[in-house]
Image (cartoon, rainbow, N blue to C red):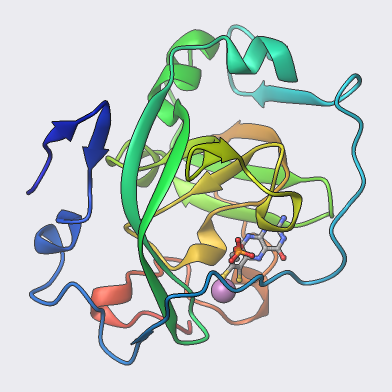
Length: 204
Ligand SMILES: Nc1nc2c(c(=O)[nH]1)N[C@H]1C(S)=C(S)[C@@H](COP(=O)(O)O)O[C@H]1N2
Ligand SMILES: [Mo]
């Protein structure tokens, strides 16, 4: 896997090799734009009252203001982005907090195996805990050297370069650690729970 840090940017665009042979997953076409794909409107939020919360089967429920979240140790990564509707955007540069950083602080109960992400627009998506600790799983607030635009999920979104992008909640406001699996918005509506782009796991 290519994982070289140049100028503080870790290159994760070689991550596909762990899952398949082609950087462009089967059935995808490359776009140079960054389309916006949301189930509804971009939700309104207030930088002064926004909270990123962590709850569920944890010893230490957490709540971060935007300023507190931006004070956490952060990384910048170059990643590819694959939407299940068929477009892929290569070389997105995201800055944010690694999933593991949050999980460690929350001190998970022994039985935690699943994670449900909650978003300001009512969207949810689920992953197993193991899938969340894969490299590239970030809570991103920066994109291409600036703030993550609101349409793309600012103030904070999850990014999941090893999965179709519906696994990455935009406007993420809550991370719930669970002992049992609960399906998210698209997973309940027939999209794949595992969502591996190189195996073309689009539908369940
Ligand atoms: N909260 C929320 N997150 C979401 C969605 C959404 O509708 N609401 N759409 C998902 C889908 S299907 C994709 S492809 C990506 C799109 O991200 P983009 O708009 O930045 O391209 O966000 C994902 N996360
Ligand atoms: Mo998507």
